[in-house]
Length: 148
Image (cartoon, rainbow, N blue to C red):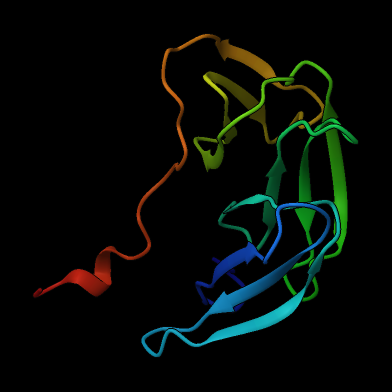
């Protein structure tokens, strides 16, 4: 959501391969038209907004780089700020959501919190939960199911 324009935009990121860059795009409603806006060079992020027009992505730890939280330019996918976390080393599924002034990061079966005011630190909240969380937040598809 961008309070300057009063516009809420749904962003998606992905491509044909999990390695390398991915495409950043928007989804228009109600047409569901997907429009490419740029390229994300660091990998395939889980995306979240913060309600102030900022777009953020989380990347889990990979062989060639550490886990990272990145503020992305919503117009072209460029990295504007990057915070690396050497303590977030789990592999597997990942999800991220901004809620209550913090980024909540779920990776493997562990949970981390990153304060918006201190994004350089990922606090371990819980490890070995016995669950792999692969999505966070409210389903953006729910409004389309109304009346079905």
